[in-house]
Length: 140
Image (cartoon, rainbow, N blue to C red):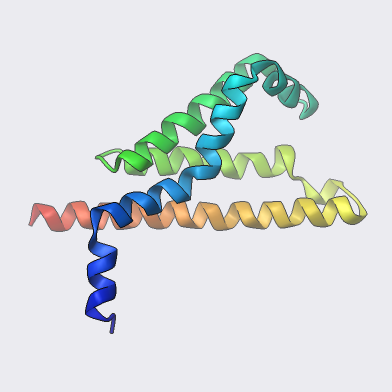
C-alpha cells in the first residue's frame, strides 16, 4: 500500500507537471537545438539517408516541439503528443540507431540507445494511460 504522504506528493499538480517536463526534456531540447541550427539538422537528415532532408528536418522539429507541448500542457491531447513522440522515437531506431548494421563498439552504443528509446516509449505510453484514467475519473 502506498503511504499517504507519497500519494499526497504524487497528487500534487506541480509534481505531475515536473514529471511531464522531465519525460519530454530530450524531445524539446533536441527540437530547440534543431530549430536554432536548421542547416545542421538538414545535414543530419542527409547523413541518415532521408529523402527531402529539409522536409524531414522540419517535421522532426514539429513533432518534437508540438508533441512535447501537448504532453506538458496536460490537456485533452496528451495521448496525441505521447503517441506522436512514441512513433517518432520508434522510427528513429532503424534510421539512426540500427545496431544490426554496425560493428564493434559502434554496434553496442547504437544498441544501448535503441533500448533506451524503447524505455522512453514505455514512459510515453504510461503517461497517456495515466492521463486517460485521470480524465475518466474526473468525469464520474
